Image (cartoon, rainbow, N blue to C red; front, top):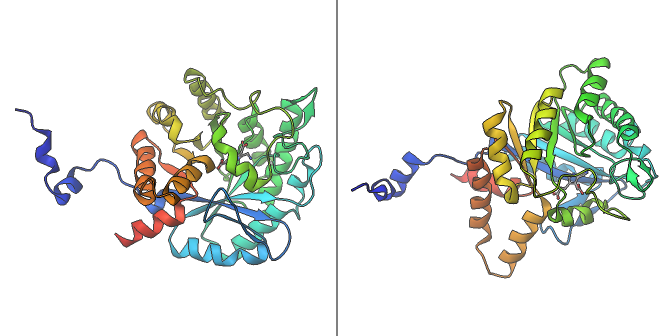
Length: 321
Ligand code: PBG
């Protein structure tokens, strides 16, 4: 008889045949940086995750570096918002200051910046509004300004997340023409319009004041279209392709892994984090085990890189082993 149980007999036997494992090298930790001083505010729906002002950020980064997490993804929360999000390309804006400070103090850490407008616009949409919708091409012009400003400040990688068509081509051209030919792009290639972003929008103060993001973010029913999105970004020169959210879209992660020979990242988003934290707090699940199982499922689906609010927590466990 074919007995698959033979190789499951002991933990060491299982270790020998284990196909996928989590590793600290694959983790990116998102960090929210708020303009101002003396800010260290816990985000209610994301226990353990805080918004920091720059003067309070060192403790957090010391921990990230000590845990050997290779990279952080920065989100800025500015005090000044306007209709076009002009603060995003202010060379003295919160993100630009954060990049300079972090690169000076932690030169080895890979600093990635989220390139978007929703935290910087008064209406909370990811670009310039015309006729009640985001104007794709007008927004592209400003995305170019924003990435150059991030590059000048010293970012190691940029991650455009607004889902405008032509973003990667625009960003690549802008970077190249300013001499940043070696600065990589992590594309939010397949970003679905998702209710799993709820806690993030509280955290980053970025909920749209009217309507939703369904004219630019993808419809969660579509798998073929996801391939189309990734194909365009691949052709336009993205260096890393990302799928977001992760847990409800493992099939898409696998599709990208099978079809593209670029590193595939996934974003284990705020709602996925909040669900586990909330159920664990109620004693309804074993939070640590469910966290590990969820993150491992992303690796098994084909993710090479996982962006996750669990990064510090999982790194502690992995470093123990
Ligand atoms: C947009 C952006 C969002 C997230 C990352 N970048 C929110 C959105 O599209 O509304 C969500 C991240 C998360 O939920 O953890 N700048």
